[in-house]
Each structure stands twice: as structure tokens, then as C-alpha cells.
Length: 252
Ligand code: ADP
Ligand code: MG
Image (cartoon, rainbow, N blue to C red; front, side, top):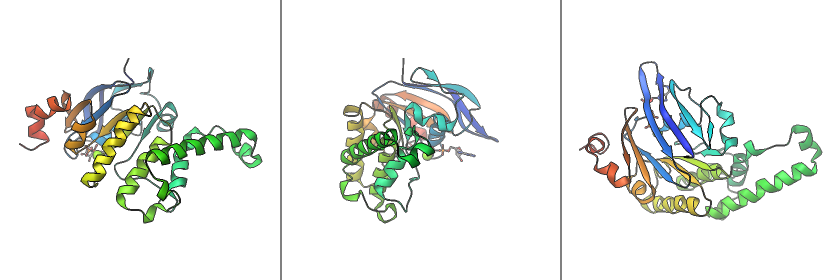
């Protein structure tokens, strides 16, 4: 069984069919990309999986469990982490603090235990630190650890945004345009990290991306959407060769 399955999902906002009848399955260990022009419904698909938006129709399963009826706060603890197209970090906190906040949903202790600082709390604190240190090492963020987000270059903030999601220790990571606004070199670095997330962390990756070069380099399979509707699905080469995709996405 696939790790993530979306069946005929849709959300309509008034008259706008932002997503309309989209189905796909992401296998464990795979890098799956969703492509499409601006306004195609890609980020909205992420918001449906994250259960931030209500489903007008359709069903979603993750890791053998139906998540259609779950609330947004119940999604991360299952092992689904995401980044946002517009970076959502705390600007006036450090890189380390932002990554530790990324661990938040994993807290199992309560307020009273916190103030008493019981062994259980210390143990959890240690686990959080350990995971966050792994992420800092993995994304080569050592030099920025104690730097305030607000003062960092855009490219570094993009990486910290990925780190915040990785800190959760997810099974599935949703990356919303991880290379947007990055230089060619920075995009290549992102491609390497996506490869390493799969190989070293055993992660499954679902990404939305505009940069076809990045998609071709890292994705096993691609779903193309336009106007909320699915256009084609297959390997990057198959999808790129699809006439409907070329017309809608490549503008030819
Ligand atoms: P993409 O990520 O592919 O660029 P989006 O998923 O952000 O596109 O948006 C798809 C369409 O859905 C757009 O027309 C957008 O205006 C609309 N949309 C997304 N979210 C909302 C919302 N909360 N309310 C109304 N319309 C929305
Ligand atoms: Mg988007």
C-alpha cells in the first residue's frame, strides 16, 4: 500500500474550483512532484493533505490510516511535515530556536512537569536537541545556529524552513516550491538535500515545484495540474512530453 493516497479530492471556494477531482498515490521512499502554472491548485493540494482546508469531496489516506476526517493539528504527529511557499519562520528568533519550535508537536509533557523539570522533561528536551543537532548538521547550518532569522539571506531562510519541517522527524515531507527565488547553485544544493533526505533519512518527499530542472533531477514521478484539474501523470520525461502539459504549463 502507498504511503499517501489522495482519491478524487476537491475544494471549491465559492465559484472557484481551486482543486477539482485530483487523485494520486505516493509510494514510500519516492520523490513525487506536483507541477503546474501559477494558480493551478498546487499549494491548495498541500493544504488539503494538511487538512487546513475542508474537502469538498474526496478521501485521503496516510500510512494505512484514513485522514479525511482529521483536523490540521492531528496531521503533524502522524509524521507529515511541510514547508510553506512563503517562508513561515519566527523572524526574531534564532535558527536554533526555530528548529526547536519545529519539534513542538512532539512534546508529550505537560505544563506542571515543565515547571518541576522532571526527568521525563529532561529526557524529551535531550531528544529534541539531538534531532535538531542532526538537522543542523544535515543542512550545514552550523554557522547560522545562533543567528536571528530576520538578518539571514533569503537562501538560508529557505533552508531553515526545510529544517523546521525536518526537525519533526517526519515520514513524509511536503515541500512547497523549495527552489523558488534561489540561484542556480542554491537550487542544485536543494536537489542534493532532497536526494539525501530519501537516502539517508529514509524520507518520502512530495514537492510542488516550478523549476522543471529540479523536478527532472530529483522526482521519480510527476503529476501535472492546471486550473485545479489533473493533466498528466508519469515520469518527468513522460509528463514533459505530454501535449496538454506543454500547452498549459510550458505555454507552447
Ligand atoms: P498554486 O499553488 O498552484 O500557484 P494555489 O493552490 O495557491 O495555486 O491556488 C489555486 C487557486 O485557488 C487560485 O485561484 C487561488 O486564488 C484559489 N485559492 C486558494 N486558496 C484559497 C482560499 N483560501 N480562498 C479562496 N480562493 C483560494
Ligand atoms: Mg503555490
